[in-house]
Image (cartoon, rainbow, N blue to C red; front, side, top):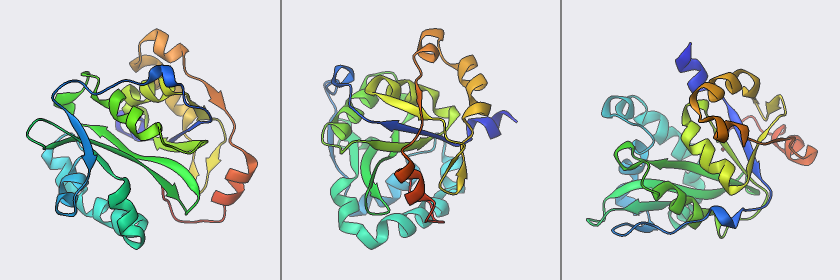
Amino acid sequence: MTADIENANLFMVCNKLNTGAMAKLPDGFHIRHIRPEELDIWKRMPFDDEQTADKYFDYMGDWFKHVYASRIQEFYDSCLFVCNEEDFPIGTCFTWNAYGNIPTVHWFKVIKPMESKGIGRALLSEVLKEAMFPIYLHTQPGSYRAIKLYTDFGFDFLLDPKIGTRVNDLETALPYLKMQMPKKDYENLRFTYAPQEFLHLLSQYETIEF
């Protein structure tokens, strides 16, 4: 049951960036674009262990083919890696115009051994400083540390019961988030409804692009 809650669907929107949340990368790290020969590294990046990365490798390949392959140069021009001093990727994130015209945040992740070093905040700062707003994202309750960061940058949870083809599991997820997050962070969560034109546009698609 816990695993189901951790992977439930949550949706957030940022209408205006909170620039006070932005930060620079710690020394020893740099941000650059993904290279075509690193695509397999990117496919494994979202997962915390090799077994899970193996399990979902084909899923990530299918996602790439469905969402990015028809706009492949745009993907390589958008997708960012945070790298260590050896230029090895340890985090990723980028913005993507889902369905061609909805700004969204995609695949924000810093590998677990590098968490809590300010790298994720710096990466989001780089990604969001040039973003178009409002910008949307999909996340899960298990990503409560990332949810704290999203909130800092100005993201609110969407309250609408359905977003496109997916049920919004916010009501189910909130007790889990309350249990996992520090009290102050949980109390800082904010909520809003999506614009009707956004919901109407998503209702026209059966595919998932964010």
